[in-house]
Length: 192
Image (cartoon, rainbow, N blue to C red; front, side):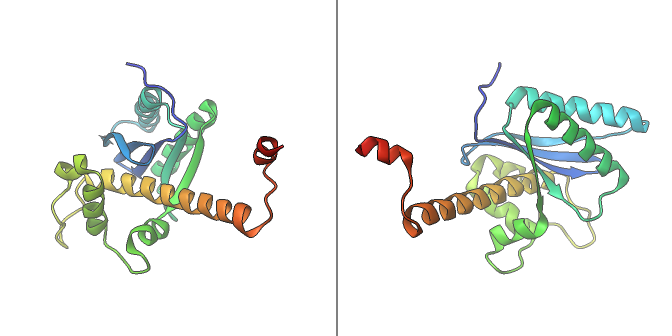
């Protein structure tokens, strides 16, 4: 079934060498799809083709207007190849791509204090109840991160971006309408 294209549909990707977690969010409240695509085994050219195939299927199904990715200071060579594939595909489809750093995500949820990933995941499970059953168990210090945490990392990217966009829109709104004289042509046409 073909989905309609929305101006506020976001595909958020949490990239790792062996997998990527994703969420598709619409109108900042509705979670349309989520999951983890994993296992890039095989020779390097095949991995790139497989990643592109999986990403293309997500882009075809949901037709987002924005693609978000986690920003890492030191990407592995494999992650760099994945990012290149994603950027090429997004450019081909004329989609916006935005990288969001860990500090921005932590600032969104932590409100000025450091916050752990499992705390962020719990907050996201409260905000999106459909994700509650995906919530991984709290990680012990000697354990590796559960693969489903990638879903919550992707959701955190989307929520963080939405908060940044709403703050920017509010600041633009207040600066234009309240701090400066109104130069809105629509209200001038309506009045005159």
